Image 1 (cartoon, rainbow, N blue to C red):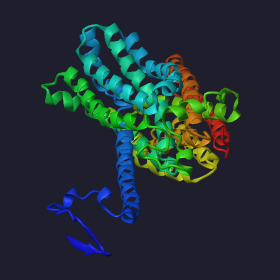
Image 2: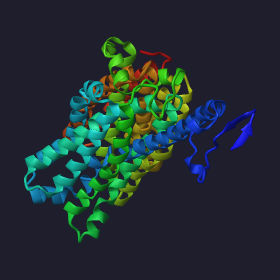
Image 3: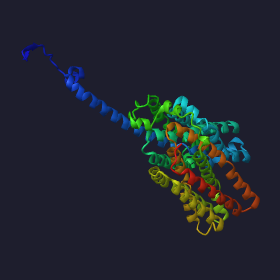
Image 4: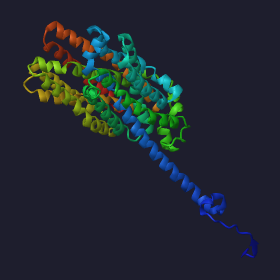
Length: 449
């Protein structure tokens, strides 16, 4: 019993300070402490969610190329085991672009129903399943079906990763686009270890090809967590705050549905982005499919041609990050698009005139020109006014762009077979760089849809 202001009150004995709760504290202390604790908890949660989003984006990007590039080193063994004809093997080179165009166009509708993170989660699961099963089937049709299944997962991820960047990192679009573009290039280059992986398993090409499913499986858990976070109402997500920031990064289903009425096909900027995306993809497929052969036909050894091709890929790792980060800080990216096109013109013109005279210079110039891909992704994220519009713009630009890219490498091969040399095909590619520069200039202007 203790006297206090003339009143005798019972005072409980507290044996463990841990049992004291806010309701046991004076009302003024609760008012002062609880909001501070809540803000501190939200801040910690927001930091954790942003780090999780970074990891999820990087892991997804690492898986966007091995489905295609891991097959090349063991294609001969796969053809022999499956009885695959040369024609069907050639078809495999055009399947990715067609799949990206057709499946990618469904991404906005899926995102409105399930949220962007949920659709990317399903895409990563499809990649993991397709990669795990396709090496161990015994027929070409099933092999192609499982490859298409994995490519479908990549197609929706291609469209929706810029959307996730726009929602989760509205103030760092360029830097985050550069980060996952760098990871994408790393994934493409890492596929060169398919043969060494097969060697670890006694030279079994199936095990070497299927090992890439492990990388895809690792990408699934972070997207499970992001999908759960994305289902919360806007302003309640861990990675966002209420007010102005939540307005900029409209999340989940609300963002996906808010811009459903936007008709990007009527926008000249959207068409410029689609043409730019398609022509840069054409150039990239020509480089991936034919550059080593150009150097070999010029008299260089197979080893030298392989190193030169590797240089064009490796250059994209640091340059993608730097270029996208710089582009994201600018309101107008037209100058960068024109500069990259100029590098491509110089590289292809050098190959046309004298491929063996300065092969490393041509390889470096074309490696820089290939950075038009992260620039295109950055511009897609920046041209859309909100997350909903970015979903539709990304689907439109990539679907139309990939369809435009399909004929280019086929025409290059046909010209090479018809003429028996590279001057005709390379002249054709040089001509394609001119509309790419024009489209990039238009797409890079400070406009929003």
